[in-house]
Image (cartoon, rainbow, N blue to C red; front, side, top):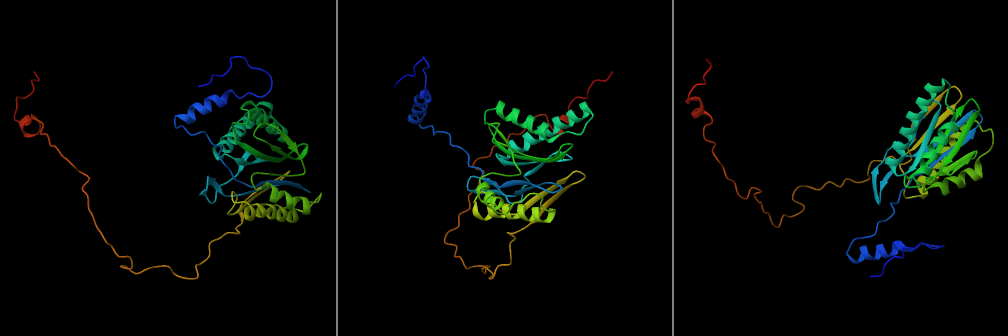
Length: 281
């Protein structure tokens, strides 16, 4: 077997290829990247921010949860949508939410969105992308409405409308065609729902319902299951079969107790009661 050079030269480094070949020859499969799916969006409107997300959680080709919540609480005036590994988004946003509360108690001021963005980007950059959290952060503070995207490696964007996740391209197509500055609340909410719906119906990793969150300077409104485009309807036919339709060709009952030994303990029960009494003098 070839050995890796102890000297690291310039250019690409292929030293791990020796290790991978060694593991493959011994039947150990190479690790595979986990495929995650989500559609999360956010956009500015006249009075604040509207965030949106779908509610499907996947585990490879399996839908693990049809109605999970992807819009996470940071502070009263800040929310964060998470795409990627569900545990990473859940615990990362919970940690930053706790730090933001401590920061507000320390400074005695209402926390700003840029503070949460800085905490999130520094944490994700520290772990070099191994925390699979792609985030859309939005809120309203003393400086007005703020909207950011934070990528798993720590890079950030500040835009009037953003999308993230596997359905982000379909959602961005809706925003590019229909978003306008200073939109009314109803129009912006309808646009967010249309963008999430585009991800739901054009991306297999996104699905189920549409969650939305409207954040203004005075109020935060969480709209859970705001639109349900995939509700199950009554089946046209009944698929109940009468008993005996499927014939039983063979029946075998196997006892799970193969062998049983019973050992009687001496000196217990009646025999112990008839023995010598304990000396209490």
